[in-house]
Image 1 (cartoon, helix red, strand yellow):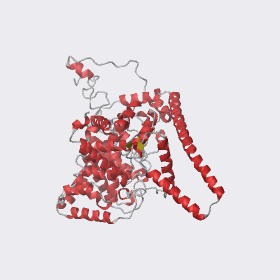
Image 2 (cartoon, one colour; image 1 turned 45 degrees about the vertical axis):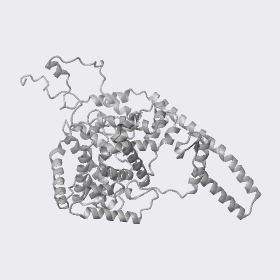
Image 3 (cartoon, helix red, strand yellow; image 1 turned 135 degrees about the horizontal axis):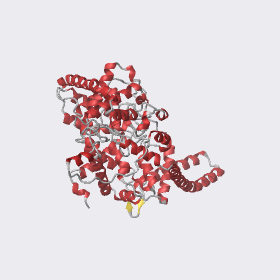
Image 4 (tube, rainbow, N blue to C red; image 1 turned 180 degrees about the horizontal axis):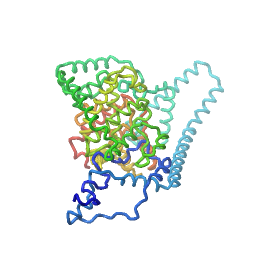
Length: 566
């Protein structure tokens, strides 16, 4: 064999299925890939398509035939990138634009109809107001009328709607599109307008200590909880079971870093061993950096590193167009929290690149998969909080000492690794873990809310089309980062929180939008809603309610699989 120089070596065949190689993820793009923006780039970097379509391979009868049709696992090819580029190039731009315009036009007409209905209902009120104004009553009469109006509005907004002869628990269960519902919505709208404006909460700063009221002051109850945490953590051997019970309802910011490290298994329960463990693990991580990071530009690692380099927002979409190497692979708009200034800093992006590259080459069964970059951010933010008191959203990490930054980087790597160890089948070839969870979500929702399930079936919405991202990114694309951190407090405290409890959180999250889902009457509307759920102003209160509902579902279904059956 050594004498045949022209023959390829057995382990050097052209394939894209490489341990450690980037696996393209369905539904993980954020924002979605724009063929209009990158069509010219794709044409420039595209290879001519093959004239023939490969058929189904015949069954191998000899070792030579088996060798000839077996994809090798040790070399990188361009097959996936070529197919993606071809798909982007072959999209008919006119069809895309026509479809987009139709969707926008349909939704504009729907909004106009709803506005007309509201205007028609408000016209009688305006006429009454004008007549009352012409009569010019005295001040006392005006006050009485104002009080009566306020009372009527409050009662109408708080009253429970009736559906047939059945009392409906909430407005979200009322029949959609009925005149009663429109009246209720009108009353609620007036009531909301009379309430003080809800303040805008910073995306990151004090995220887990902040509720939607925007009051950062620590209450007596929060101070008492913080004391309980400190008492548990102060012992020579931390009672992890007690720590989990306390953490389920949220962890105070002051003790979150040490609590996460303990609950994730990164640090031992014995207090005397923690410092030595930290030093050893941090040295071990930077040993990996010295050993492997220089190989990021090697031929068999360059695709992995290049994808990481794109996913971590080192460039804006405009500068992305100017990068010639990017045209060789599937182009993604940078999407690791692109709106938060903290993650636009070069030093932060370099930290993320090192963490993700080292993890990818140490886990060749999955390699780097789009979406894993999101899972670093909660750990990184929490461990930055360990060293600063001010808001982290606009904090310049370069002001920290180099040793502190190294500690944050190593701790983030090891805790992310612990998390991914429990859900690695989410990211192996074909991502079987996510496939199973999406199927389980569909079965669960069909059991707990058949109306929502049938509504999505009616308009041919597949759960995989929206829930894949929920499982792949652990709802990080659906919630503000402050809510993700609060959610992960409970995930760390719950047994198999990331791998098992997350399913019930997703089910509760979907049913939470029951009213909005049932209002949408077409496929496009449902998909736009499910991929852009209005959670920007969510805080601790909303997350706590979501987790309580998820726990109720878990209690009912986790140990009783027959409950799925009818």
